Length: 122
Image (cartoon, rainbow, N blue to C red; front, side, top):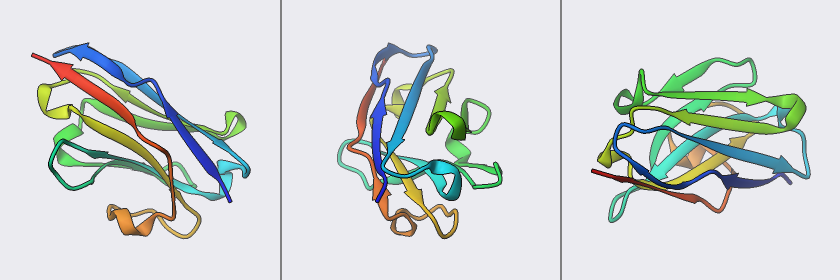
């Protein structure tokens, strides 16, 4: 079973940048599809970005052109580079993994990190 730990969250001003990291242990990430989800206050968890085992990337419309997901299998780490941050990006961000397929639905992923808070001030 893979364990996922997010880091890099914090408080940033609108227009700023932040990079989140998701470090895996217990298993290697090379055989997992990875994704970032977020949960704004009082809302459902929503898809942000995904990256497949063959490095195909997928993004929610709300973050296209601003966020970039990447993976470094040698370091067993997935990243989410967030630029041009908006107040609407404020949420708890979660890293997720699944060995079967990449998807935009949260229930497609079996493994989750604990989440890291991102707060964007305006």
